[in-house]
Image: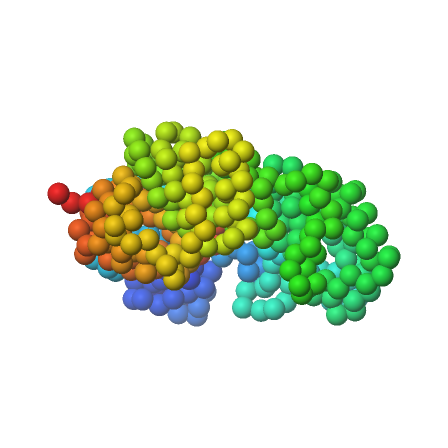
Length: 402
């Protein structure tokens, strides 16, 4: 059997790549690809811990060892930078969240073959994998899947197909079901019995008109920077507390001593409260009204040095003269990046900029704008919150030259 190619790396979409540039699904670095298509395992292949791997679309890299995962996360970030001719002064070792630490997830549930299946979708398919185990979810979330199946089976909708949003918060599990038509007393009682017996912190149902709370014994909060902040249904949280801590730690380290900081795309205040806790006065600008109000109320309740501003930074970005009032700027935009805001930031005189991103491609585009405007890319820190997947995050520090 003739050797056809050595797998030398993992590409962005998690295929293995041979020396001659062929992409091979399910390959690990060091594997040998033969002419008949057979893969011979190499030194970096691992035994997938989950029985659903290979079918479930939630994970793509369980067949790779830890060294490969670290290299994959690092290379995604470094390659994005080099693609824009960016040369960071320092690249920190990648931080990977451990297994079973995901505190938020969206699952899918549907009636299939007379039973309820709950899980992630299969890769490149609308079919749902009925999870019997999961090595990324926090146990508190996974443990709800079995009682969720029982409750949904009591619903009358024969074509039941819903999305299930799960998040672990200070009071327990926040569960939201989207697309469920609740008809009649029996269906309502089944939901309430499920919420109470499962010890849910909150249960919301979206029947097409927005999330409505059906069960919430006490107001929900999530603690950010030591401050409990109300959590609106569906509000954004970092995927793992571990990953959030890594990103926040970078921001605190880089912005220590900054008297004033503008936190742009601030959400609930993940970074704002942490920075205020070490002495900075923080402007927290956010377009989502519910997140803005939650941040504002939390800051007022503890008298934090956080001023919450409701502002759409895509339509109305901070101008250079506004930005120049701050000793530093932190931004954590959505996946699309922050092109409009970054254009003004590049024209400002802000000494330090910390850019947090969940998309290396849009980050690299924006980073190139900052560098062209006179900033130096001081440090890059890759973060892999979504273990075994293609999703990669990063923290970066830019310092204005001269």
